Length: 462
Ligand SMILES: *Cc1c(COP(=O)(O)O)cnc(C)c1O
Figure (tube, protein in one colour):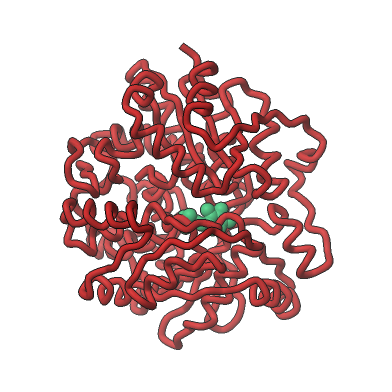
């Protein structure tokens, strides 16, 4: 499989280059040259198969010439440490709602499902090339902890994670600041998540810095993130579709990476139906579906910090498809967005967007009420992000499509929100029970490109 940029002018690359580079050199995002469609026989053969088996068949068409035995070994290793044998178990909530638990990895959020595999893929590819990378990433909390966990102690990568100072949960922060390995660094930026994301983009667009530091990205702009996330749509849709019906998903959405993986699963032929974009008060995507206008407003802090995002970077991948894969059209729209902080979708694209997706905005009160009602009715404690998803799901439940809400984090990762809703404590799983006792290591830096580049330059291994 070859990868092209959503902006149409970067060199076409193979899987390994797309993995290592993250962002394309024309500022676009890599996407496969075409969406592979699995045969009905292949799809039928995966029904009920273990997660790792499905993963191998989902990844196969995307990874080019990679050795399949090596890939299989990496997949097995990536998920061996998960706290649930099914990796991503489905739990039934009521007659037509299910929850897909994506929080059994080492940092208690769904980001682990992609990141654990990506850490191994980087190692594998860099080892073969005798090369190193410097990974820089922006996080609203969970990507960074998953990345630091996946790369800690890895010999061929230095990792620098930027997060908005004071705007992430204590568990998220501690997961980034307590690993002791010298190759991983947490940077608290005096700004919000969009500032962090803009700084990372600016580093990638500073080609001198980018090349001398050999920058790589593991943010959700990295195609491999999306790729690894397709797998759980495959396993869960096959489990619930019964071979006939389609399965709807409600996805707590920030950067649009997770739900875009659902879109790709549908393209590949898996029985994925309605995809509900569930947003909090930062509802740019919901407004875009309603009005056809993607208009950036200020980010507000909510109970669900991992979704406190205005510019959803992966939305560009969908725009590319909506614009019939015309890079020039995407460039025009992104320029408009850059200069006016807004862009208007042509009518045909707006209609196509609404045909493929639904959306809902869930505010703080409804999030809290959903956590309470779920606990009352099922005994289950939802984290606030998953609660946003479930509240949105209930607005779209249709009799002919079972509805799966992605539970994107473990409630212990957001104990303050859970305490506000339920007045109870949520203990951390046994394996990380001492998290609050470990010493922290973090650099607080201004929202300033030069300061951050200097910090990185001084710490990268030669
Ligand atoms: C990252 C994250 C999201 C948002 O996922 P995107 O892929 O950015 O849309 C939702 N919930 C949690 C807990 C997350 O960590």
